[in-house]
Image (cartoon, rainbow, N blue to C red; front, side):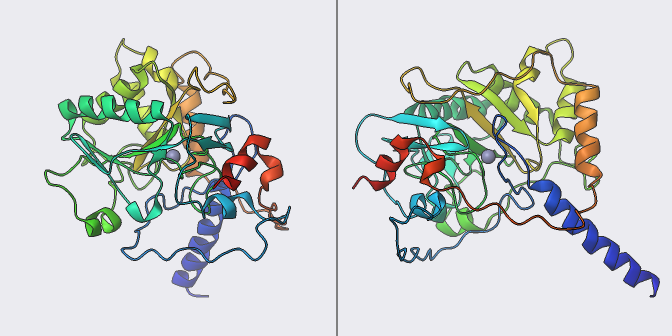
Length: 323
Ligand SMILES: [Zn+2]
């Protein structure tokens, strides 16, 4: 085999390993798959409705296939039900697609829904982002009724998670096409060991710090290389770093998670992050994991069957079956 063949075999093995490594846990200890390999694929200007399910009442039908077919929320008061990665949303509210300081991206996904607490958080956070940036580009929040999604996330199920692009809002109202096709800015260097110095500015730190200091938030997920940079620039003001959690992917966006709102009694809270700033050894071990993929298992395990309604709180069955 000539050298470039060896290299291409090596690269494809590495790619497989990266995908395997990216299928991991992101939900307060629950083992659920999350693939972060390409967090912002382009959307489409002509979304095609999903075909009807042959037997939507079958107990084996995947919950994601039911929730993905609901294009409208349920009526009634808002309730976040269950956990971030095993729950749903009743009485969801849409974030307007164009606000004074934000614009929603990938409208074809219809994932700009949330608990009203998330909407009001985004409104006040976006107003602050005016100081650092022109405003926010908002990626996925939740589906109209929350629940598992057919692509992209393990969490985002209860209307309390939102992805915010690491791209300042442009100075004009984006066209439908720009919202589907524009890419987000990757601020991590290609080797994954640090931020990209050509792109990084302190504004990224200020923006994430503002989200962290908001009492409504409980965790903010960023790539380990971004957390490391924030650790090194934070100086003596470090308490806000506790909520900033290193995670796979999240090089093109950060993920803001709100704590359960007081009026959502069925919302399953996640244990608060460990105290301390999480800098030093913790963030370094994350970088090691992210940049040194383990070899794929020799005998691939059979894929987990997708979660059914039985894996969600009973109230989520009513949510997805409501008119
Ligand atoms: Zn997210």
